Length: 62
Image 1 (cartoon, helix red, strand yellow):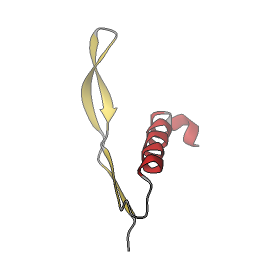
Image 2: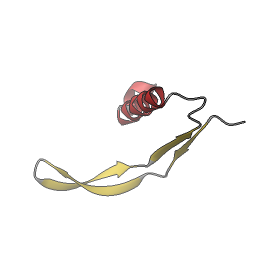
Image 3: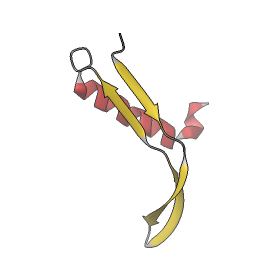
């Protein structure tokens, strides 16, 4: 049985505010569904935060 499923959406250029300007930034949706009988929610949240940080600093993944 599955204990967790991670879904990663496609990257889309999305307008965001930066330093008073609107700029396009590549954005993707990440979603984690887990069975809380097996996966601790705090650890799952930390995993998602760490994954986000790693993706945002993709040059460090090499």
